[in-house]
Image (tube, rainbow, N blue to C red; front, side, top):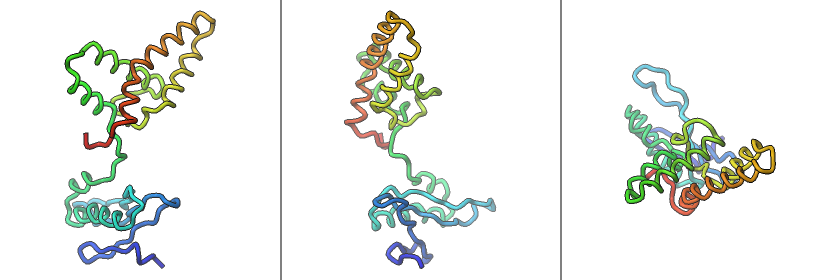
Length: 184
């Protein structure tokens, strides 16, 4: 038997919220939508990013209504996102607000990209800003120190690590203090 407290209606149809997977976690919506122009569509299963039932019902209605009306593009725009901007979005915003210091901007951006590329590999601009944590710096230090074999190379490696971290630190501090939501 489904919990009637999680029941809500959209266009005369009944839907239920999926309960949180863990205590205090967010509600989910799961339903089988009608086909999209004759194509088979998989079950929609999305997190509603809230643990308050009333707010979850309102968000679920916003997601389900466009799908039932056949407006798939609108439904994709309403899809719950991770809540974090990409590194590329943050870099673009930073460049647009600090045009008077081109050398500083260039060096800070390249230091941040080097840190991320060393630890995560790939294109840093496509990664989420949620990776900008102290753990990123600790992993960067471990990777760089593994390469150093002798005492003199370790000293040079520590100096190099410090240089990269000092240049990338404004990014790490800014993103922990400021909002990193996708509404940048």
